[in-house]
Image (cartoon, rainbow, N blue to C red; front, side):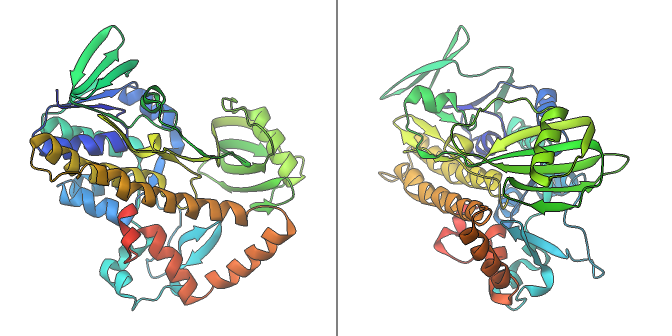
Length: 403
């Protein structure tokens, strides 16, 4: 076995396709079944795609399948009278209008109407189309299986999957923020502790509630969905330790929404809820001998700007060909080391981009003053163009490979 990939999400499956194209013997271990993944994502499983991600998948012959999958995912920004998205993105929930973009900017002209990114897709749909392509290339995918331990040496890795042992040349951890591969390898995961706890929920509610509100306790947004449901997002400012595995209940959503809004709103029914924080961490190294990391196993950050999945897919695209050439013996000396050298700074850039948005959402007077200045800057052509070029991945810079 050439490579075992721990984790069959978008990052692991992208890597599987890359290695499959190189004709390698690849095994993907994914602890969830496809149905369990869909249930875990729930109705909030839609993800933004940026331009380089879409372009990469198109180069891999997946453009038509991707466009078909994207038809299932609505554009949350809506459309204006010209058919263009009236809102093309945001920075720290300061929304940017399409009319402000510099249409003569060479990077924007190159991608045209795709400047608002590469559209949206349900993560489970993206995983399925990548998995189908990987299987066509001879990749084996095992669901309901995960790495329980491993020992690495200079020649390969012995991987434990329950009572089974698998010998492979390389192990790549694409197994998420709480990566078992990273923990077993002993790779440090330094970063900053959370100061925000966010809830996204689909609920039915009673009571008068404006569409958004900012206060000393946090902020919220909400809007109607078909039927009687509402999409609610709350972010509460916290200090000290944050409990990770708190279940999202109707009572929790109601308590948080009342605290932030100051209104006696009642949650009469909870359809779906998820909880996250703005914890920001990055692996000290993306490679330790025969063990490598990609995606959330290598970096986590707040979701502002929709960068996370795209950053991980960028990791997989870069690692894929470098690892393949190394295995086939065609790589120049040190090629695989450039994976960490090039992708670690990219991950750091994305983390800084996300943390800057967290800072603008703080309730203290200085942050609110800075937020007012940023609002004015984003209402200019230069400011709006700069932000959209970066979040859509079309900025012509050395860091454009980050997406």
